[in-house]
Image 1 (cartoon, rainbow, N blue to C red):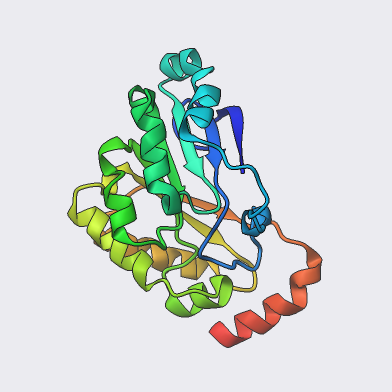
Image 2 (tube, one colour; image 1 turned 180 degrees about the vertical axis):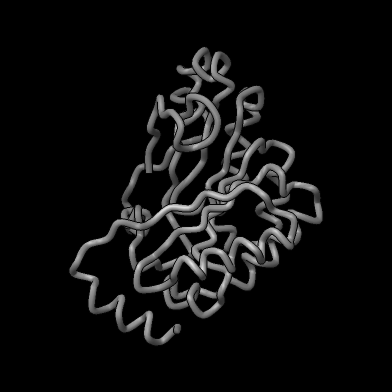
Length: 212
């Protein structure tokens, strides 16, 4: 979708460039990047060297601040091979972060593990019912991938985002998610609240009634 340069304190360590991709397996009610679902059949596609040339401009900033490149979306792990091609051009010396829902095959994650310094995982909620109502997808693969990452010794590289989504979960649900993940071996969490439009108030009430 694009490259957003010179970001600070939002997408990993230091100064970063955020590279975003089209495509996502989720259909979230309050999608932060709805353009990721656009039909891209008529869009000019980028090559790995095109992207590398853009992000490499800021290498001095990355090295000075221990920053680097963050791959987000959409779902960047749908493009693992493309990302590896970018990194092999010379980006491996930078701090590399993946922002992901983890709702992909573990094979797409595993091939990137040797290159990744940080992962930011937006789990929505570990409760399967809440997750499915909000994303229209199952979180079975997400939970399996979190277990596999922990078993591989990567839990200390993961920041888990646990959002409060009014109408879908509560602060009590957030704490249940945290405890569940702590038992799995995770210790770094990012709690925040979605800011949404009042037009969704009726839908929120309906969903919260179904869940609780």
